[in-house]
Length: 397
Length: 113
View 1: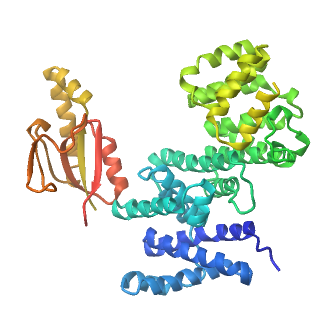
View 2 (view 1 turned 135 degrees about the vertical axis):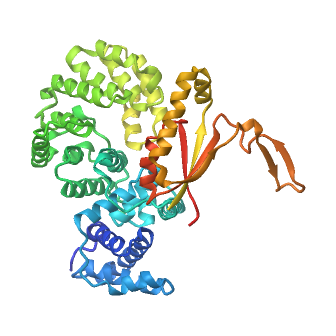
């Protein structure tokens, strides 16, 4: 009996649903309807497969259901119906069709939450309910976002095509932002129970798909390497009780050294193109941490240098804060504190700013101020794992 | 596919335009005229609107028609003109608007087919 667990089903659906959506959109020219048919097929699969087992050709199964449903649904729409009736298995979308699908889902004329929901549903084959659970929002909210986005795609005629060469850079940045957001959402959430969707896995899958389709885009490779470098260390991030373990205290023997080496090699090959970008730089910083045998071996000089390059390309107060953390180990906590003080008005509402201050204050021998900063951080975060760490520090300074 | 481009002036834009000398203003108008000429084959009509203080709004949802002086939304950003265009899709409209040399805000609204 093949594996019909939740995760296994999700993987099979993901491998085929987006392909089918791309092929149907290509053949009929109607994104919204194609998307509906695929979603219906996905829902049917999640109903039948746990009972009947995953079919030998899941792609053919999904195709047949989508086609039958389409012929049923579109009785009065003659042109569409004719096209659909002529469709024969197997349908193979060209690589460009899958790219077009990704680009339409992440179109800048759509609001960002809709881009995320559409990408998950259309490209990864998630159901509306799965998306709602992953983001802890009501299912009706996700459904409305998708309906509205599809209405806009049809109504305002957002085209199903590749961006022109001169707009590709900007459009690709939007796609990468969606994948990065997904990754972050999954990485920060610690509700790792079996029923909840592993968004980190979806983000890696999407980044890898994009990398297969656009192998020479250095920032795509950079994002893929970044995600893999983080994932390779997942086993060290939590203790046996599910508590968050901060980087200095992680058991590095739990890290997946092979995966780290592979991702670092991928990043090095891309660096040969000499087209650095924010994702490649972030990945390079994470690689510095991941490749250090022990916390004491971390190459902080290199990390500060990489942060300088990153700030040059993409200035942001949060990046400056991370640079200040590295400066603590190259120039000492007093210097780091000075840099951090300069960010007070920009980052006062950000819990990690106060948590970072607390660590520096502790290093500077000011435990009471450190406690106050930790308390402020605690007020600002709802993440249970982070709260536990802060609570512990306040109780046992 | 037809769209209407709604041109929106901001307070800052209006002030900047007023602060310009005649030569500078002439040059600003010339840039807009040049844009219109470049896209002539896609433009189906349109016009500049008079200032919002010339507008009159009529409300019909409160019993008898209520006549009010001014535009229907009072705000710092006001519609100052419109152009109807015919292009392949939203991306083409977006590309066109990206080089618009006039007011700082443009709304692209598709027309009913």
